[in-house]
Structures are given as structure tokens and as C-alpha cells.
Image (cartoon, rainbow, N blue to C red):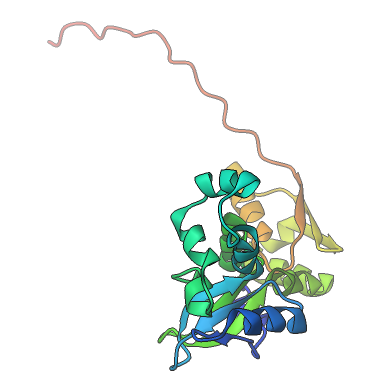
Amino acid sequence: MKAVVKEVMSTHPVSVRRTASFKEIAARLREFGVSGFPVVDGDGKVVGVVSDADLLVKEALEDGYHGVRGLIAATVHAAERHKAGGVTAADLMSSPAVTVSPDDTVEHAARLMYARGFSRLPVVDASGRLTGIVSRTDLLAVFDRPDEEIRLEIIGQVIPRLSEPSSYSVRVEDGVVTLEGTPETIWIGHEVLRQVRHVQGVVAVRDRLVYPLPPTPVAPGPYIYPGPLV
């Protein structure tokens, strides 16, 4: 069974309102030791995300476009130049926010973080209200699962869906699964491996399966003309 975001997220998210000032945001970033916050409206719905990078734009560009700063300003995106003059979270935030739901899989959240280069994601309910925060460190919690628990899931749930469990030997050490045995077909063996890789807590899978040889093709014999029908 795949882990979902609500099982690993922080349920006490820190956020800022759209009207939060630059100084307030900077102070809270230092206070909580994080790189960013969700920005919420009056109903608690996530409308954007503000990060330390958004605040640094002001430091880099707000003094004008002279000398080196002028060279930077010539290539910076218009949105970044707008942020340089921002004074509230609404001015500085990136919007719309990239979010996940409590029932999204940890795997989905990890892929989203990796693809976007984020270190954390707001978690929102069906109405868009903030319910939690999930970080890269939170996602790594799935690897705390005991080895024996992983092994029992593989033997009791994964393999029986595809093959005869008694044909396999399963060892798990530090999250690394070693599979031995003889699957009925090459396809079944590959599918067992694929599904084991997606078991919660599995770090890697070592394939020690002995695959059956494919059937030897039979060469067609010479064609014999049956002769005319009489």
C-alpha cells in the first residue's frame, strides 16, 4: 500500500496573509528557519507562495539599474522587476501556488518537488484551504519502515497477485530487497520486480530470479504440394 501525504505532512503549517509586510515575512523566515511560506487569503485558501528568493530580488535590484546591476536588470524577467518594488506578500509571492492534496501519494509529491526544484509544498483540501506542509525530509520518512514489515507485504500481498509465493525467497536488509526464485514466465518475473520497487520503504531491489528459457522456435518444414483433388 502506497504512503500518502497526510501520513507524513506537518499538520501545523505556518503561513502569511497577502497583506504581510516585507519585514514581517523576513522576520518569520528567520524565526522558523524555513525558506518560504504559503500565502493565504481571508478564508485560509492558498493563493501563492513567498520564499527567501523572492525577498532577495529586492536586495539585488531595487537600488536601480546601474553598472553590474544594470546588466542584471537587462536580462531579468519583468515579473522579477515587479517583485523588486514589492512591499507585501501579495506583491512578492509566486502565484498560483503548486500544491498537493492530503490523499496524493508520497511518490507524486516527491516527483513534483524534484521536477520543480521545491523543498516543500503546501497541502490543501478540496476547497483549497491550507491543511499542512510537506517537506523533502517528511517524504523520506517512508524509508523508516521496518525491514520485516516490508518483507511481509511483499510475500503476503505483492507476489500472490501475480505468482505462487512458495516459488520465491525474499530478504530485506536496510530497505534493500533481494528476490530469489523462479517465476512462471519472464513477464511475471519482471512485473513482480516492478511492483516490489513501488512498495513503501523499498530502497532498491536486487534481481536474483532464475527466468525460464523462452520456447525454441520450430523451423517450418518444406511445403508439400498435395496434388490435384480427384
